[in-house]
Image 1 (cartoon, helix red, strand yellow):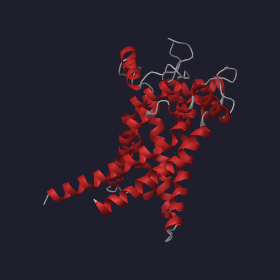
Image 2: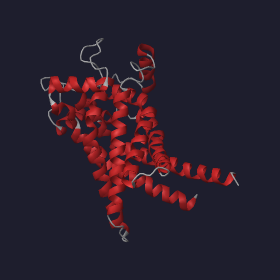
Image 3: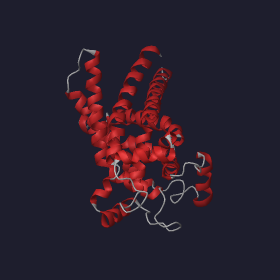
Image 4: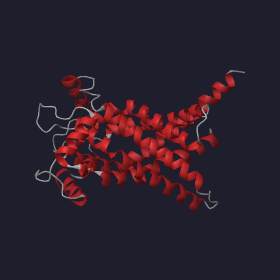
Length: 298
């Protein structure tokens, strides 16, 4: 008797993991160039910097002119290696936290948000070392001397170690970024989707889900971007080589605010929204349709 629930859980978990991994892989392949642009904006410190980008269009032109088409795909290997397990963790843990919270007398609205927060914190633990490597690679503007992913990771470990000053630096900022994002992302998506009636027309139903997913990714991006800026500053190159200026999440936010103003905490917002608005919708749709297909065929 006990074997059947165990088999049922394994099958359900396998579907969630496969669907979540597929969602992550599709999203990163489509949206990575915008992530490169977002990171570049977040690590530039002032408009007088000769390397600073004047606008979103200027950043695309400069990257393409000086680094070529592959400049938009710098640092893509770490997220590809990370996105499949990361999104698998994201969706699997969301479903499991949601199930656990079913034993507590919470409203459905609060259940979705808390389950999202838990999934984001869990996701951050998995992804942070990959983020450190990715940001370092994306910050490199040289077309000809980009280190390989593995050699750069080995360089970080050798020079700075595996701890919070090395391969896991920016950990608290990553926790904040993913925890806040997933809390808003899942909370908004499932609560709003449940309010809007299901449409019998497949095309209109697709558009209903895509529209809610787009809003979910956009709103979550606006709310969590100060954590994202802090993470990029901590994990990216420091202003003075050999001197660590940005160490902790909230202290970094305070420093950026004091030195550059409140808008500096929203640097890279436009490319972030352009990526995670439609990207967030893509992930949710790929997850839902893949999960449904797996339920029917496996």
